[in-house]
Length: 221
Image (cartoon, rainbow, N blue to C red; front, side, top):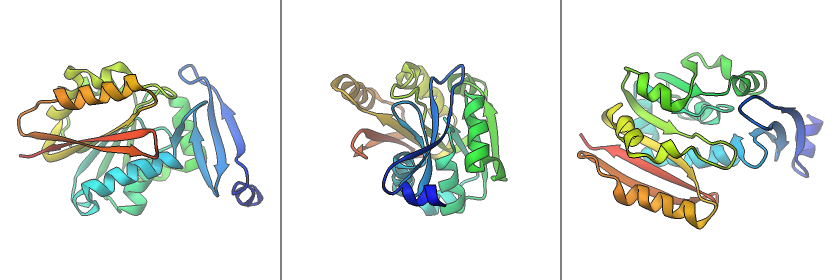
């Protein structure tokens, strides 16, 4: 409790770890809440939870509640999953795909992710999972980062087509991206301008928490 109170004055790091996939994973008390960070970026809770919460509000909580199956690519500490379950009261199935098993161990230990009854965690590469899965989803949340960078495959046409194929009727993709420089800004503009899938619409929510841009893809039929 003391650390939580003191964290309103200064962040208090309580756990640090490394894995074969992550140089640094940190759990910190900040402004009265536990957050999960990499060396240079927020991975779960804190600003990231606010960013994805805004995207979910934009889609509409009422719409999300009526969905059956949500896919989360990039689980980390599971803040978006907690938003879905605790705030939106989503009762359907959630499949979370995370490449780093060490992060899931931390999520279970510090954020009680393993207590979410309607969640199935799959340890896998997001690209590989998307290629293999035979399921269809009402909402696909893409939140895949390697510290402050994003894997190039996320912006490739093949991956986008596959993601769109996995959407059920009237489904939605919520894609969280980070823009730290002009090259990344141009990357996003190119992605949006070149997007074309019949029966789909793309839009952006720009400059969320200063450095993030949400891309929303709606299936119209």
